[in-house]
Image: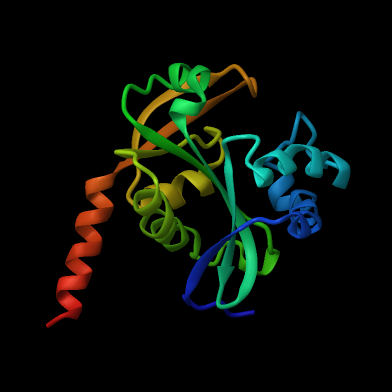
Length: 194
């Protein structure tokens, strides 16, 4: 299957999307890196328990579907790090920033070179447009070379490596600043106006 770069949009995850997330969390390419409450292959009930508070707004983590040319292919979750003070301290962050996690759930869309463009679009359309933050961070597991490569290709820079107590592993903290995205968007807009 040939996948070409296309239009990427984002929509908030709803309760009716949770079976889709459940399926994605149980695919081999996702379960290798993602756990929910310590489970690599979570049940639908566990996915609902974990994500329903985020959907209702009871937990301050926003979750979005990634829609590629009209097809849901993955999800991104986003939080302001000030809402996660223990993680912010653990990651050594001293600025007003957001944190994101991304997964491509549909196997046909994995390893197609789409992730870095999706990340850039999410930064432009959501993170730096709707959130009052100066920086965005990602914290991939140090062995997840594919994710690290995608974030770096999207413009993230290595900040440091930390031991993430909550998950019991080493993670790279990668970051990108608002001005790198805003300036990029302004350049594109100026070039289109010519």
